[in-house]
Length: 249
Image 1 (tube, helix red, strand yellow):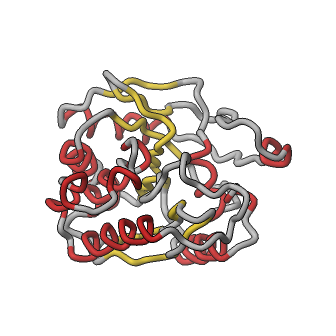
Image 2 (cartoon, rainbow, N blue to C red; image 1 turned 45 degrees about the horizontal axis):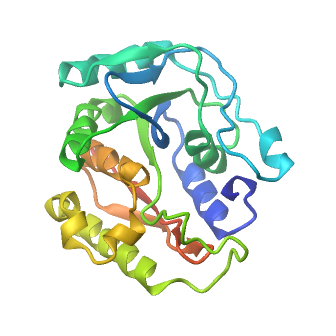
Image 3 (cartoon, rainbow, N blue to C red; image 1 turned 180 degrees about the vertical axis):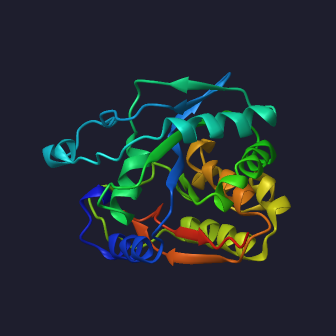
């Protein structure tokens, strides 16, 4: 539903997109494309979006984001990841899923910048972080690396009928714990979040929405301090916190 915008979260991402311009391309890792075995990377020049959700307003299925692909960048991503022990195969037909196109559409609505999506491996946090470090050379080459998921994402506990519902205490505490660890650069604590943080089981019942954070932390390691673009919740406990990392090559 955040794709429809009209709120402070959209405004924050749009303001970020207006600041971050001139990039060559975007590489995005989304919670909604998780693969076992070899990773996949979109290597098409153009492909339709994936509307991988059901039961939502019809207008969501009419939204478009016709960003071009970049086969050369896809080969570069595959080269970097494969060299580090993450074999990658080309994906020629699957378009961008909503975990990719929704935030990109909010930040860069013109859809003018080429986009390549890399699938998310089923892996431990430390290995996801290492995958991110393998992508780090892309930053110096003018590519933005985006991780799309959510710090607190438990659909069984979401208050779907009230977008502005009071925030559940357990969700706020876990969200703040993660933000503090990110600010401090304490990746070891983040790797061990299931034991180190209160309410981790409630906030992260399954890891796929949390995992993209580790990829981005790896890509940004050695760079600047994180910036909170937006802090807040929808539907009582769905964290919309959005972070950016400066990179100084």
